[in-house]
Image 1 (cartoon, rainbow, N blue to C red):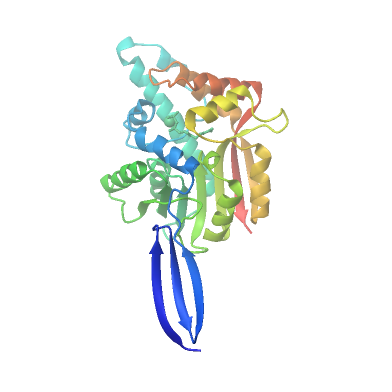
Image 2: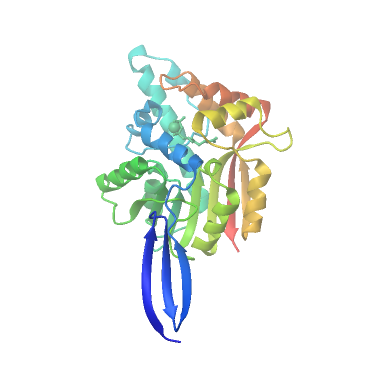
Length: 312
Ligand code: GPP
Ligand code: MG
């Protein structure tokens, strides 16, 4: 048959119906143009990050050297920051917290490489851009970050512009469950404390699509302990505080395996992150969630984990 006519009907801006007449038959195909924010949950997560713009715990740390993070820290802190002249004590603690957060991002990148200037990476839930900027600085690679917060995307692109790396580091208002990046186009992907906002099956299906064969995925996350009965009171407090939904440890390995992502390294960072929370609890930028993290980690209901996996 021959195509007689072709009509495009746009309804509600969420999907497009193509109506094609072939001979006398009517053929209708529906192309879903999924919006970035699809569910009530995603809308409330985006609202949290769009309105949380005066957050000294992240802004004051970022101002130390212009790397703005939305994750926690690893490694022992220097106890001398708590002593010495009172008038500079606050800034010494801020500097030290920032050093531990940057050490966490460096550790993530250690598991991501080796990468070079011809490689392309994806930052799933890129926040204010810190880890992407560090990846480009270390490897010279191209980095695309996606976030469902338009405020964060704007902030992160501004940081890339200030550093003169906008040609290689770009942030997009997109959902990491639907990145719009070409299939097999990335040599590496990471999520730095962002997987508690999404369904892991949906996430790893998309990452398996976008990752090149042999590409590396690195995840740093907090997860609930299957062995001790999952969600404790302290873990529930963390979920409530951040509007997130912490997954059990087992859910990661199940979703990775189901999507051709094969773990090569699993590092339990729980002991390494406790000093960060102890110092943060003593700082002027404590937010009130410190005790819940310390309780959850110390009682063993919650782990801070790094998982590295290869796309097979
Ligand atoms: C830190 O972001 C990370 C999250 C909110 C995700 C939850 C992480 C878990 C391990 C459960 P942030 O740096 O914006 O947090 P804060 O403002 O408290 O420093
Ligand atoms: Mg923070």
